Length: 447
Image 1 (cartoon, one colour):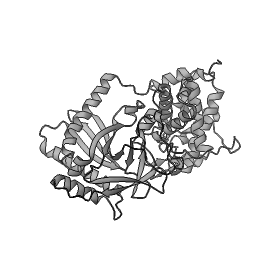
Image 2 (tube, one colour):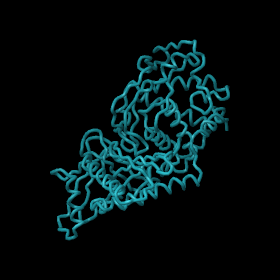
Image 3 (cartoon, rainbow, N blue to C red):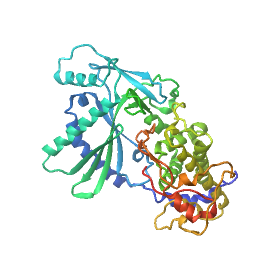
Image 4 (cartoon, helix red, strand yellow):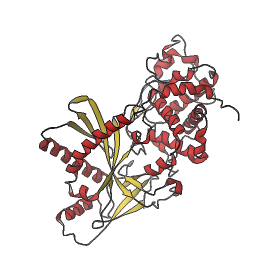
């Protein structure tokens, strides 16, 4: 078999990956201990709410930490609170939405009387979430969840004399975010995102949804109270199936971490972790798990090319489960162009300097390393449309574009917040002129 073309990159890749976080079993136990203590306090108080006590099934920890794809310190945790209606309240019917990637939930009420006072109160609360036709309002569900957490926090403040933690609450989309500080060790701060999700154990009959296959292992899925605009829309989430589809692809995880680090180091805020994960789902589906047995250098370069092509050629990244849902539809077009242009030049530069040891490291922030863009400050970079028809707009690249964006997916891997254009470091890049052909920016973005 011919040697892998990009094998020379593997030493640099390993060096870059050493800068990402790999927790020991002892460290994982410590974080899990903190989380257990926090939930032992909060869950007991939250269950005093009749509706929460009736619907809550279990917590499901999701996100990068639990998928072994975290690249920085694990101080952010995503937790789904699984909700399921008991039979005395009724049954939830899953209906299609006109927006691909979403569904609507309708309550088919059990009309039998409920003699138990707390159960009757729970049923009354759930009915408040519905409209005249019985469809759930995501806004009302989220408001209820916030009130449950708020009551639990007030009870903690009033009833626990020897407090271990200090809590601050905020909200973002469907998530109730708690910033938790350990009082005796204020340097330790955790951010917990609580998301209420309706859990279903059967595969939904939603229009154009990918068919279930045995390799997905389970049919369990979530309806998340998050949408672009329609208050009746709930986002479809198939976290469990995605976990199984990417199972046994450890080398893939190394490449995924590398691309996430590149995204963070270049501050490409609009391109969420879930978008990156989606690229890898498509690659695995097209090639099987055996694809990831190739060398790290070759798979990294191929995935960078895919990344670039989604932005510049396809101008779309289809949702893995319903292709009609373009995950990139909410990104600023200038951001797509500039990220794609950066990747285009990065790939050409790597190709030209493949025989130079350590050259790939120039694109990543490494500890105790001078940023490469600080060199060759006397050169001026000139870019026009003639270079393989990839547009690069210096005026756009040299400023940050801020706008609100309801990004379509993140099983919390991801953040639905503000879309920002690539660019804070672009001005510096134009001034320094790395290799006189590379354009880009260099700031760190949150995962």
